[in-house]
Length: 323
Image (cartoon, rainbow, N blue to C red):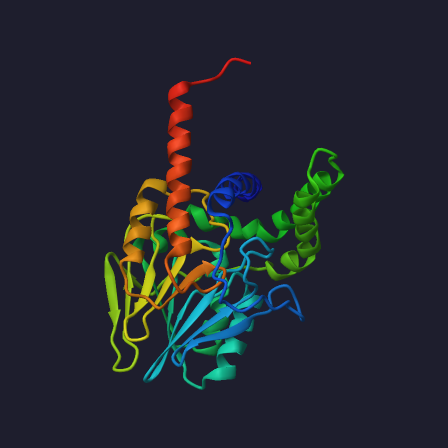
């Protein structure tokens, strides 16, 4: 999968992101803290307290900075922690564990996957090592992807990330590539050594507990509801709602400042975004990017997808244009 899919995803993501970035204006929550530059390695993490019982552990706040690592969200329940997403490599997972232990002595009881993409689950081994009793939760569709062909790419992930260096050099040598895009390729080229090292000997850890519609994690202080609201970024997206804290962890259904749109389900995605907006959240944590405190950015994503659909359908009706 990887030799073709790595490049295919790179190209398709670039195209989708370019269109959606233009439509959304790449906006983010202006009240969120500024990015913190990692110091030790490309996978280093930082922690943002959102409420007294909710913390976001993040790499950087932009979704366009390699390595493309998702946010992790920690919910503190009375007798332990529930963590949403595990990072994208064993190294990243270890960094997340370190961050958790810096603010809580409680064990992690549950690790929840929002979807099957490796940047959200390939750090799970560090959780198994730190807390052997942790139970992993996902939708049934995510479990199927993690135990089937979609996850097969991890066997060659290190090698194929190394191959990205050749692609980056080609783009940097191409006089037709704009300076702004070359800046992005320089970031990719700089990150490649860290990616190759971190992505050695990857292992998938599928869920122990699966659900179809919803599963509740009761608690007196921070009850959680883990839900499947429909296909959006993948066919098995899970979201986590903490009603007492009014925090909604959306996974890659929402990514800021530029949405990830490769291999998604655009029509259903719009419906799921509208369902998210119906929750009375004070904080919405995207799969990547800054914490959102209102619906402004989600509205822009909805409008962007609608624009892409409308213009794509119009182009399809017109057919090929003469040159």
